[in-house]
Length: 151
Image (cartoon, rainbow, N blue to C red; front, side, top):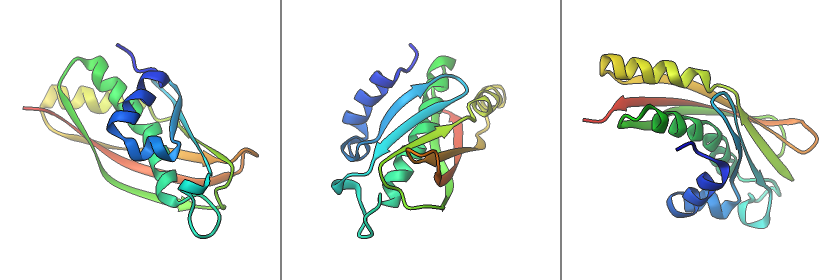
């Protein structure tokens, strides 16, 4: 069963409540691209009147991890997923609605196919870029995902 934004947002309410209560939502997903968003509000702000960096990180990670989850589910195999590493760059104050887009879905299938074929864990990097309502880049997050077959 394919992941839809509605199903995934319900999942976040129960399994990722910090993201859900912060306002992080999945907006779009397919095999190549996922889009998430979060709006700056008083409950997800920092003392400098902009969005807390960790809230941006949750939205960015969601845009990558939703595609990993979807493709693992589609494989029909029991495969674990974990963020092994990440880094970020902040280029502008995050205010208003921030939309994160990841276009690295093609990287996932290769890693899953290889871990299924060899039984060895695989890692790969995915990038998510956050833009404000004016289309200005506010932050870029990179996540190193690790996948491996469950025993």
